[in-house]
Length: 265
Image 1 (cartoon, rainbow, N blue to C red):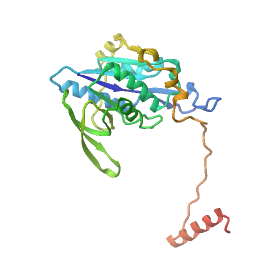
Image 2: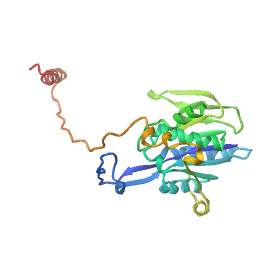
Image 3: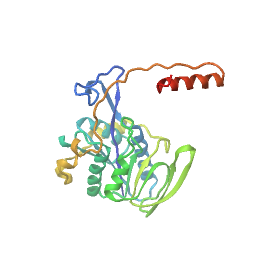
Image 4: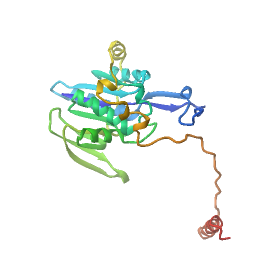
């Protein structure tokens, strides 16, 4: 039995940063990288299932990205993942979350997992669409924002508790194999032990390219994305005016501002 866990190395801004000359992203020198927070919970859920199971469960982590992604993959290995896969070709540069879903689906077709976990979203782009895209390309059932899971390895069904807006929850039964996007708080992610860190440093990381996955350059990268960044910029700081007075006075002042904005005054 195998669980494939899709993880991402996300970027966060340094205190001081600059936009690239082409205005399409932040200058690489000002970015800090780490494992996506949501993916830490996804990995922990897979590890918990593995440790509770009476049958053998293999946990495989996969990430799409350049060489630097190996650091995050080794963190996953240090926490107990059995194998790690890094997928990259230069043609993948600029792939959006939907296209990354296509790439991960190609990996899944080779790995043939029984379940796939991914974080609800990434902390950098927050698209919340990679897991759903992956399920769509595989034509698998999926459940999003999973805050609780009842699943026994080898079962044909799983029960997922989904977190909805407005403080609501939803319990759904889903056929397996399936793709689940995991929400924060579903568990308590473990820390890597010193022994785990040492063992992870010695483990190989499998590398896959476009040709290994049977994908073409036209199916990935900037040209295949559904959304294109036109410009990245630092917005000008606006000014706010506090309206004092009684509710009636505030309403009258607000109405006056609206009339001025519409040119009626």
